Image (cartoon, rainbow over all chains, first blue to last red; front, side, top):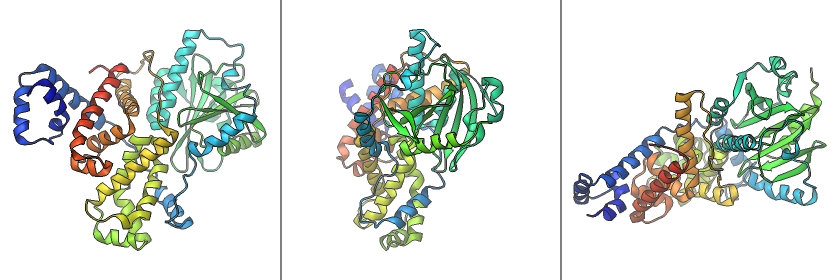
Length: 277
Length: 175
């Protein structure tokens, strides 16, 4: 066998899915060919990296959700997908056609100025966080915190670091649990970042920072303005994920991993109604 | 393993049998979904898979293992989900992250890199790779799950692995 023939069967050889006689011929070739041996070692390394990936357990509530669906609809009817961005997109795009997209996340730029290179790096790094957040929020959070100076704080004591009580210090709406609160020093701003869990186990990140600080985290991502509980909110679609930002008093709130407009409306209403201490 | 009694119960829409089938198989479906559609959507798509399983259980003729049929439904559901516009897309890394906790970050970076590389290959190649490397299916089982000829599984795994290696290299990974 020559290198080309060995390369074509390398996966089957690696996976033990090859006839014994062919295997023997390939072993002879691999014993003499450093290039093919190197490729085989690459497959092994890839396999080791893949096996190191960990998957969290499914949420405990999953069977209850399935059972609820089974109770609600006949099995013969095709099932509707709950709370997906895909189902939300047409509505948001329709809104985009009628709403002037003038003020967005990118326009919350004020006196604080950072160099373009630093800004570009921030957008890239935040993009990495966003990418990772969708797949594995816990791992993404670890990487995010490793990049910036931060301090794990009790939300009630965050005022000592940022000069105000963050919104999460007043609790969260029903159905949400606060997992952690960090004060994070980024090149653009010092913000309070809260990681929250929904009852289905999915994760939401809430960032809060002073209104006079820059937060151009999403680069050129398309923005859509829409009203949530009488407040103009800026939505950014992030390749299968949704972020929303709005002004809350003298601060800005940015939520990452939101489900839909209704969830943002609920959060805005809750923050409006809860009194700052 | 899902046995004949559980399957018979599911065909009769017995809730206890459905729950038993779920308990026996939901972890592997969820694991596949996390790798195929991402953690945030894995719960929703897993839910859809089991609703499809219970809806289509009469179509399982027993020619293959139930688990292989389940992987076929799960793979189809994941691919359909991704085709509906929720395919991952990532910005390339242009700058090295600042590392302040080297060993922990190395581990996290490796994990992040392989996940990013996985997200960049075609969903069908990703499914084949995950079914082999994480779920441990044989080539025959993968062929049945993805509905492709068994003879093409090896060549597609070859392609998946080479594309993953290339993406890892592009992302700055060094062996």
